Image (cartoon, rainbow, N blue to C red; front, side, top):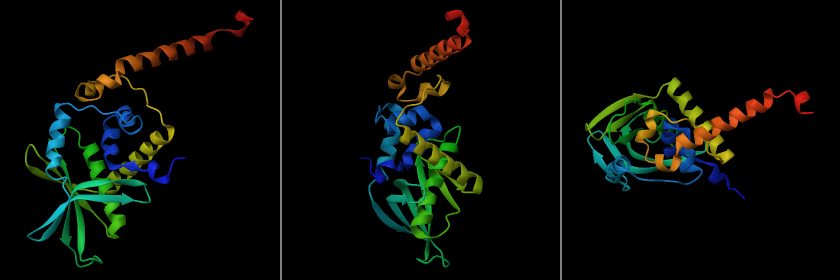
Length: 219
């Protein structure tokens, strides 16, 4: 019997989902993974901040590898870094500020922003205070980019969480057509999009042919 915990969505799944729904299902439904140079480089960068710990810096406290959860959305995972800034209006005297570490700046920031926003939604529920913004830290450029967590981004994030729950509930892997982004996916040799998409096109063609046949002609 599936437990309620097993139906929760991992924060990392949102990054995969926004890149490709088939990739997300292969990883989080089929439990498949394959590392390449890109993923290994990203993993090494994360290893530097993934050890739990904390330190004090001027004007803020920094926590590393912070465990997060949100009962409302059934989200669970870990934040690379969470800074705690002094905030007089907060019950604890601190306001959390999530910082997501990335290997390099992407051409599209949607997936990164959604993952960051999901962390903020967890922190808001955990601490009972609004988290209006966070930051992406681009390791290659050693630069921080502030992200405003507005209503549009929050809606997009909750939509992504709902879609990931749907994929997990179905327990199946969507079929997608091959695209240029497949070249940068470490799972491409396991995914075989050109094969599976071709099978779907053939099935759809046969179905249409059957629908076009006049029943009187075969009676």
